[in-house]
Length: 276
Ligand SMILES: C[S@@+](CC[C@H](N)C(=O)[O-])C[C@H]1O[C@@H](n2cnc3c(N)ncnc32)[C@H](O)[C@@H]1O
Image (cartoon, rainbow, N blue to C red; front, side, top):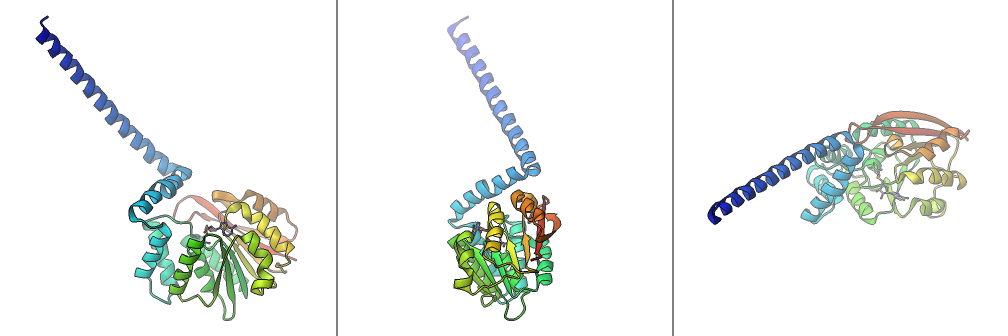
């Protein structure tokens, strides 16, 4: 075989190898994409990781603003000033169509509305304000002279919630308290003139549900008929809280099966009425 023929054979072999590598990479990428789509459609943890870590961080970087800022922009642009329903609709539309966010949402929001109406509170308390969605839901149902205190430890969220609540026209009814629930609860009497609470919405980090409920009892804020409502009992779940509250002789509990906000994933809320 001449030198020319040999280099021709080598060239053909190399071309074959390159083609094989390219086809393998193509098929591999396709299989990876299919596996990713299946995983994202069937596994809530993967979906949340994708939405909250991958997509959100990329969007934040590209737009140089946070998701919460984008929610505020959407409310400022689309909602009717002074109309709480239009603010709630605007947040629900944004979070179901554009970017998922951890508001209680429209489906569990109906349960929240019913329990607030049942409690008819004069003093309502919320743990976990985020951008103010549930605070607006609660406050729009309050009677005259009733108020909602809502606790949030993230200053950026607290400031955005303040603006959204202002747009909803409910600033007079809602006080946002910045800080950790465990630090604020013992100060409620002295600093915020709270003697007893009629209604508490627990919607902060789930490991705080149980210790903060105990703290509310220890500080003497619960009275006969005080109603606690806890979100996310199934996803992500608060098993120590559920065990505590259901085995406590002073609480009468009711479970409300529902779905995680803006998703088809199972979730539930738990109502606990303090019997004194
Ligand atoms: C699920 S979001 C609240 C959603 C809001 N309730 C709604 O439905 O519109 C939870 C919020 O609780 C806040 N948070 C978590 N643990 C907290 C704590 N110990 N004290 C105060 N805020 C807390 C987080 O920063 C987050 O904004």
